[in-house]
Amino acid sequence: MRVLLAGGGTAGHTSPLLATADALKRLRPDVEITCLGTPRGLENRVVPEAGYPLELIPPVPLPRKVGGDLLRVPSRLRAAVRATNDVLDRVRPDVVVGYGGYVSVPAYLAARRRGVPVVVHEQNALPGIGNKVGARVARRVAVSFPDTPLPKAEYVGLPIRRMIATLDRPALRAEARAFFGLDPDLPTLVVTGGSQGARRLNQSVSGAAEALGAAGVQVLHVVGPKGEATPVATGTPYVVVDFVDRMDLALAAADLMVCRAGANSVTEAAASGVPTVFVPLPIGNGEQEHNARPVVDAGGALLVSDAAFTSEWVAATVPGLAHDAERLAAMSAAASGLVPRDADEELARIVLEVGGAGA
Image (cartoon, rainbow, N blue to C red; front, side, top):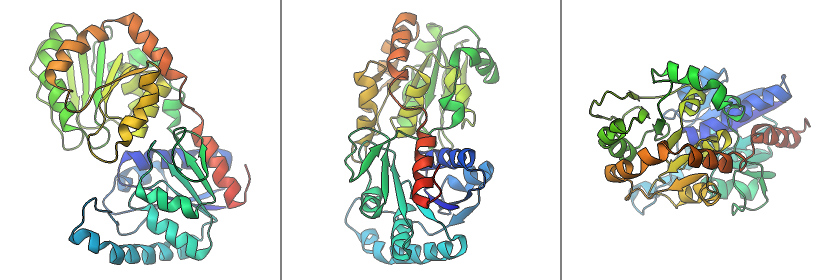
């Protein structure tokens, strides 16, 4: 059986794609998997590193405003569909799986023309344009959050890496803190803006370094590939890194985390039981706040608007929370039971069924 997985750009698409690929291999070791991406996305690094072949097509960004770029979309889309047809000729997949974004729309359209069945997976609580198109032609539609407004939606959860889904934070804590050069005993705040970083988070947390250090709260700060943080030295560890490959260790090191509310961030934090302050990205269609809402409503996280997340807020709120072991334990318990941890295999079974192989 041959499967084409279409998704790229950021970790929001590539992480569930790779989690599904690994699950397919566990369920059917003889399955042939090819990934479809664009030349400028994160997939160009992470897909080959994971050992899967990668085919590239031209990106088709969908502008949010009327202008020249919008007028060029039809010609770009036709070129991308032609390139995808060439990939289909080479790969001859039994099923195409799309995760949304720039890559998936050409894949959906090309697969429909060739009569190849389509499976859609939507990461966010509010779907993007690409998967709204895909849901119209898909045989099955899987979603990460209940009540996602897509036709034929089946709630399976978000596929996450096994090292996160099976994480035992207490057992790994000492190793994780040693790995990052952190004190083994101090309350630990982990800050990450996702694969691209987040300027607001970087500035606001690093600007509160003096208050955090004075309170004995150490920080592991993942600033992103183009981000930066310049915390003042306090004598309390404040470790700044560009990127983390071992997110399981970052989660295990954390007593508390600050992050955006992309689907991956919400699901990985909840699945591993990390108390979290979610700061939704203030652009798009509001999907990040919707992603975080179930965890926040259950008491597993705090929700702070981008505008309100200032250094003053961090200094006034985080030290007390990081030292409140009873509240952190309650938040962890509230979050950890909310999201499925086996979504990778559930989606893989759907893909195998649609592709004709069963599971």
